[in-house]
Image (cartoon, rainbow, N blue to C red; front, side, top):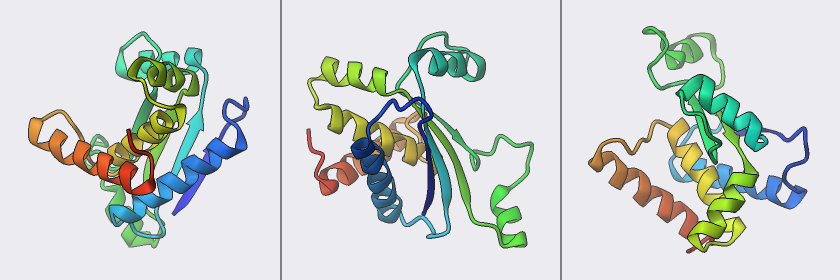
Length: 158
């Protein structure tokens, strides 16, 4: 797994950057992503994630995580997987934008530790980048079940 982490404003400490990387890699292994898979996580402020949310999701409020999956089928019929195979490129599943301040607020609201909520956000984003969704009830059961299993196995239980 080749995971790039961007935190230009030092919004999380080194311990949490390492937690994000370890958990993302652990989750990727659990769902059997190829080793040459690429992705990124960018930590951003509430103002920046609100701007992204407004521009790309037409929702004018900050949120904890936004995922931009490259394999979600929104590219006018262009298959990134076919291009990657044809040219021998690594599989790039996309980019996550995480707002640690909103994650901290959610942790307080839900009565979780920051680490548990932070881990939840990383795994939730990873699963979205990997094609999982929770719009339909059956899909939600699969995604949330897998999410819970990854977090519990990693040691981030409720």
